[in-house]
Length: 282
Image 1 (cartoon, one colour):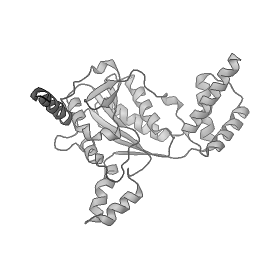
Image 2 (cartoon, rainbow, N blue to C red):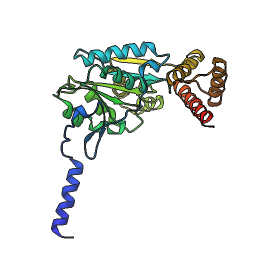
Image 3 (spheres, rainbow, N blue to C red):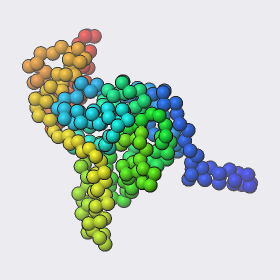
Image 4 (cartoon, rainbow, N blue to C red):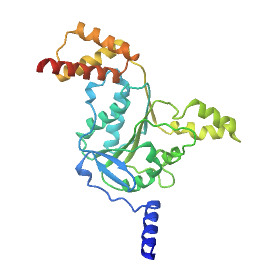
């Protein structure tokens, strides 16, 4: 291998270790972006996977609180970071995306940026990219949690607390998690049993949840709420079914899955829509 090839390989390796600063995109191209690394970039999302806010049933209190917080943030007023935690399939991520869409229709400078949990170590570079621009940004991390040996939570503190520079005034952080404290109980117990100062080792990670100003809990829905979800989906799609037929089928569907949630309700609606389309083409 000649000297030139060696220098090129060294240059590539150095760039991989210390990538060049990302270029700011044209934020007017979209209201939603995904943060990607290697190289750092913000990719606009052409078609966002979300449902209308009006279709979310059984989470009225969480909806109203998050909506007010987002409106306040979009208006340039004070707003809290928010942790949406609780039961699986009850609309945590759907609510975050739907609230952004509802507010963004009236505030075109409000942008949503999704960041993957695995990329939280790069969040400092992302904040540097967003600092000082006119637009306002909701950083959104879906299914946030940490297991033993993971240290991305330390990078997350840069978003929640801001470090020496402080969190940019135009950035707020929304996250969803099935865990209230973002880490499993056995990890907490392991930290407590192996640490020199057990309470300090555990508090460093458990207190991460405390840095969210809003904790919005999501709990399993009742059967009435489950049926109302399906009915609202059907009404919105113009799918006409008798309530007795809808109810009996929906209950059987939930029994086969051993669960009742917004996700199960949506899956049953998709099943009904497919059957209805097949019947029309037959």
